[in-house]
Every structure is written in C-alpha cells, then in structure tokens.
Length: 126
Image (cartoon, rainbow, N blue to C red; front, side):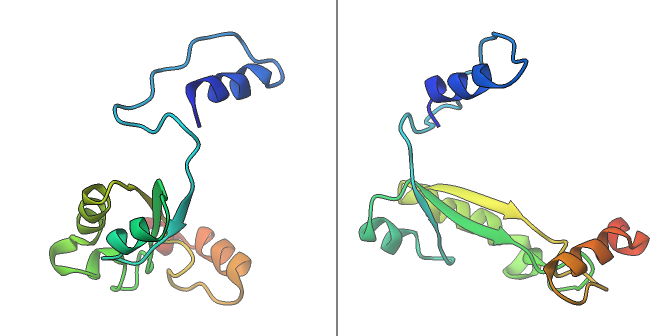
C-alpha cells in the first residue's frame, strides 16, 4: 500500500483525525504488490514465474506439539533461511505466525479447535 493510499484509508475512517503517517520502512515497495504462498527454497522459481513482490509462509505446527516451525530445520533456522532466500531473489518475505490451530488439545474443525485451544490454560501458557 503506498503512503498516499494509506493516508486516504486512514483519513477516510469514521471519526479519523488528520495526522501524518510514519514513513514507510527503507526499501519498502512504492507500488501495489502481489504475492503468493511459496515453499522453502522456491524464491528463485517464484521470481522467474512472475514479478511477485511478496512471498508468504505460515509458521505453524502447534505450540505444545514438539513439532512446531522451530523444529523444521536445525537450530530453529527455518524462518531465517526463508527470509534470506526471499531477499536474495528480490522478494519480500511475509511470515504468518499461526500456532493456535495445530496446538493440543484442539479437535474438530478450525473454529472449534481454535476456540478449544483459546479456552485451555495449558495451551495458552505454551
């Protein structure tokens, strides 16, 4: 989202005050970008397929399962490897931290599993 569009969205809200937005981060795209979910090691192929600006990956696996994202690569390097591969090929990495669904006890469809985990003190502590 460009700064001008962000300013328009903020200024257009009900009861919005006029104020300056903070600057965009250095090297942030100045145009609308499109992204796609992409597996580890796939940044080069993704970039060759189309000029995608963003590359998406869930960090998941459950908070109390022993198999969360930090176990996917040695020493919890999954996220840093994904980010390095993305930057090396000119794509902005987007990591979504979503551990709730696959945590225990869960069960049932996504809504029921999430609600059960949100109501479980041990799950939330994990």
